[in-house]
Amino acid sequence: QVHLVESGGGWVQPGGSLRLSCAADGDISAISAISWYRQAPGERRKLVAGITSIGSAGYTDSVKGRFTISRDDAKNTVYLQMNSLKVEDTGVYLCGAHAEGGTTFWGQGTQVTVSA
Image (cartoon, rainbow, N blue to C red; front, side):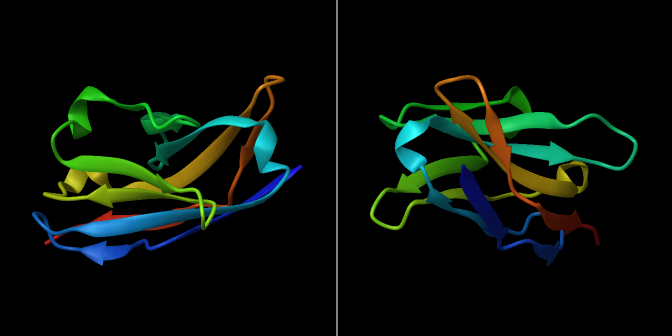
C-alpha cells in the first residue's frame, strides 16, 4: 500500500507559477513511476507529466517547455514546477503512483486555479 499527499495548489494569475508536491509513504519500493494528472470539471482525468524510478520524464504536449517534473528520493517526494500558467491549466491535480504489478495508488488532489 502507498499513501500519497499532494500540496502546493492555489490561485494564480495567468503567467504565474506554482510548485506542486506529491509526498509518498508506504511500500514505495514497488513503485515504478509517479505521474501528475489534471481533472477539470466535466472532463476526464488527463495525464500531465510522469517520471520513472530512474528519473526519465515525459510530458503532454500542452505543458512541454512550461512544466518540469522532478523527484527527491531522500524525501520520497515528486514535484511539478508549473510556469507560464494558462487558464486552461485550471483543475484538480492528482498524483498517481504506478506499481509494478499494475496497481495505481492515488492521492486526494490539490486545486489549481488560473484566472485574472
